Image 1 (cartoon, one colour):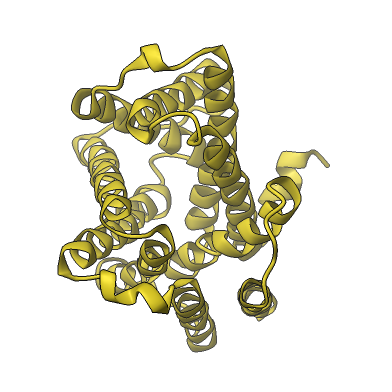
Image 2 (cartoon, helix red, strand yellow):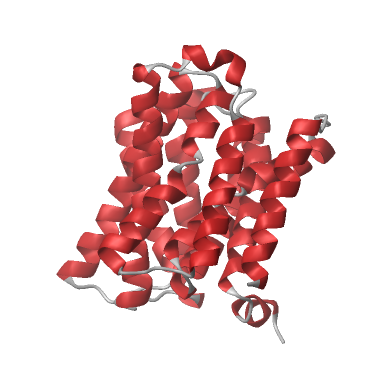
Length: 289
């Protein structure tokens, strides 16, 4: 059995957790990269490098049935995610990272609402309850409550907006992948990354002269991790409940804590240990139920 066959035979909940693991490794690479460069200088380039990398190997996986509806859905996904990324960066401009992260963890809640309204996609009561416990755990333990006073309306609006757009982008994605069966996971991410990259280049106007060969190599490596993250996520989304998939894929903070201790030598505090144990424990219950 090939690695691809092994992965495709896994339950969608496990694939979503694999996506979270790769997402955490991509975060580690991004942290290292952003020590030297500004995010607006690499965002568009990173997405375009991802799109071009996938394009080179696209004969191995390409599948898309273009119609006015599917093309409109494809562009809506990219525009929604590009808008989410804009508010994501605005959130971190306005407040501390740990406070912003706790608000961005609300993303799956919007997915649950959107999938219930538009897809009539409801999972089991137990899994929905466990998913919301994961969301609550990440929000509670990620926030720095001592500095919560600095989180006012001007910071709340972009944080909630980012969570909203990231949460609802899975709805047209799910519809394209499952309901219409008009595209597959790697093709969807190839188009998404390319469109977002073009939008970012137009509006962010990066200064590429600030980058050297080392930066380009790290951007490409981080892009490979992003490919693994998003292709796994879209594949899990095509197989299972949207809300549960997005919840499990958003357990990235738990994996990031563990990986940071190994690669960045960051200390695991009691608070971080509680997050890891609760989030991964609840996730295990979902995969086993």
